[in-house]
Length: 168
Image 1 (tube, rainbow, N blue to C red):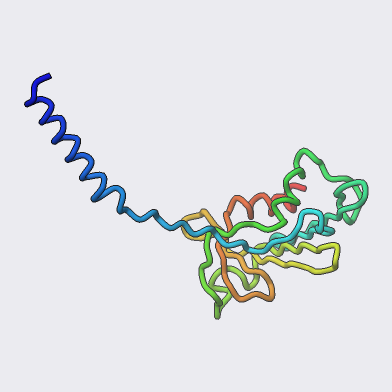
Image 2: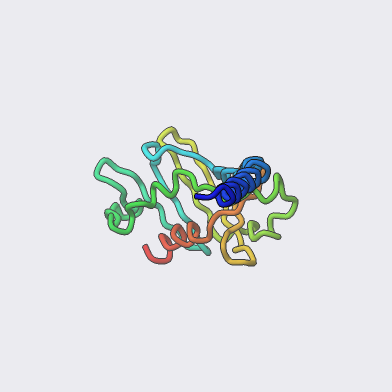
């Protein structure tokens, strides 16, 4: 290999190394913020799940034999029910919209479309209000009773939970 070709290759390597050192290595990694938890409960602590949607209501209870419809005692269809308790242990919010709201009706929370109450074995109740769907159709406005912040919850989560009432 000639001296001229070696010199050109060496200059090209130096230019590429300089570019990488100046521009690529100094880029700051993008900060990713995890979506906030709407609420958090343990799977084993769930005792009763009540879902009210557009005036209709369905209540499910955890018994030693598994989950049942509370009013009839009939067991739930486990192929359909399988992941429902896990979904209700605490959905992850897509984002916090506001720290507090003055007019809940503006977001469909007065009255809410859905009221989901999770009763834990300790007797504590976590009641979630689902309001209107956002204009882009991807989320529901949601709020935990007794808590001021307004969150966005994936509309798919709300649809699955609401189907427990309209398609039990």
